[in-house]
View 1 (cartoon, rainbow, N blue to C red):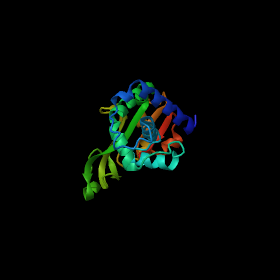
View 2: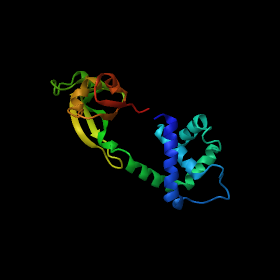
View 3: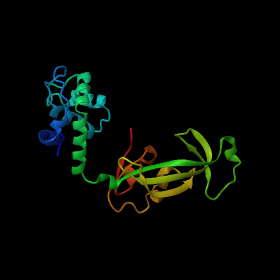
View 4: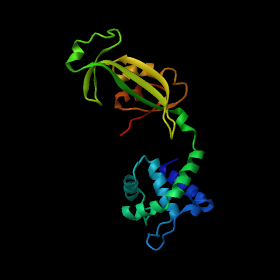
Length: 219
């Protein structure tokens, strides 16, 4: 299914939901909002923007202006679009709830992967540190911009929308071991099914070398 078919399918679904339930929770301010574009179209533009991985209203509106003007010729200005969305928040919340009920239970196959430093010594003291020499080593933590002596704790967790992730597997490596090299131990036996993994760029090479993964790197 190409993007045009997805857009049409989404619009028909929104229209059906709007007719049966969404319209009853929409706010009406017809005396000062632009009504050349329907509530169904506004909801479709917003939801389709989310499906295109646009994360803010500004990004969604810009995407629609650049790619969807033939489909939505009366798309208002950004300020007008925000105004219409504000009146549709209850309907949008209900639409997202209904849409989530029809999607696969994706979060049970979605992994969140990251590492954190366990610092035993830092700065110049890292050269004299002798604690746990068989496990620890000298390394660098880019997120903290810190040279240190110690270990890394790697965690693969299951996504739980609306609450904290559930840890699935933990692994310890020396601070001087690259995250990518630690990946097999971190993943453990969690590759029996296709797994979507959200992780930073340190693990990016796994997209080309590890079977069973759908890799996502946050912007």
